[in-house]
Image 1: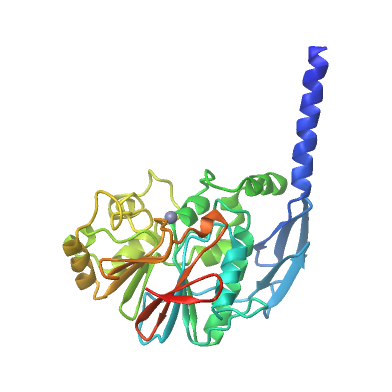
Image 2: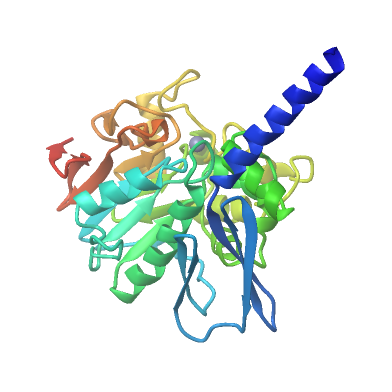
Length: 349
Ligand code: ZN
């Protein structure tokens, strides 16, 4: 009797998981081979694929409402410094919340109602952590990928900076993945680090992103730059190179400066502008002076809103989008800072 009860429970559990899988639509994941490209989707919990010749012009592909625009060219690695940028929008820690991402960008005229770039020569900075936690990381990434190409074509830019969650997923650490993506891995019989490997469209794009950017008098990076970098006389290019050249590598393989940069005091993990052991204002001043900027803008440490510290020398832009309820972005116009709210209104910072 007990044995049958056990069997029944097992069957029920299997049925439950089948129902959940049947609700999963995801993708595409696009693998590039010299002779052909292959797109993989999960539709209703089942793998679907299509194969086609390498594209020669931008093309849209889609199945089960999971669309993507593909571009024939490889995404270029962006520059580290930009000057005379008139308008900026900054958002971070999207964590798989594509709905809030689109709503915020649309509410502030950065994208139109169809989700296309509408910010002319403005720059949109995404300060890391698009992966993990939420159920729409794929949708968020394809939107940002398309905006990167559309922004360039319009004379603007999208800067996607690496966060600690990009580094984790690209290196096969699945601890914070939404359960949906663990199922996608199983259905497609590939793990996320394979689905975002260098021979995939989004993997190639992500693996050629930087960890920081300087625009006008502002420096952007996911967690923050540690004051030690001033004492070590490191340049922005030293930091970016040390970080990105060792992006895909096991913890144990990274050595010296690269190892330091990928640890807790490095740019994607550091929290010392907000938490103990906390950087002093004098140390913040020395960072600003050393990198020749007036503001450092970071995500990673969640606040209840976009918030200025030390007289806006440090601006924190992770306003809790990860909770899936609300969010904010930072707008910079004529050297003035504003919080951009979900209803489209703005409040001076
Ligand atoms: Zn983070």
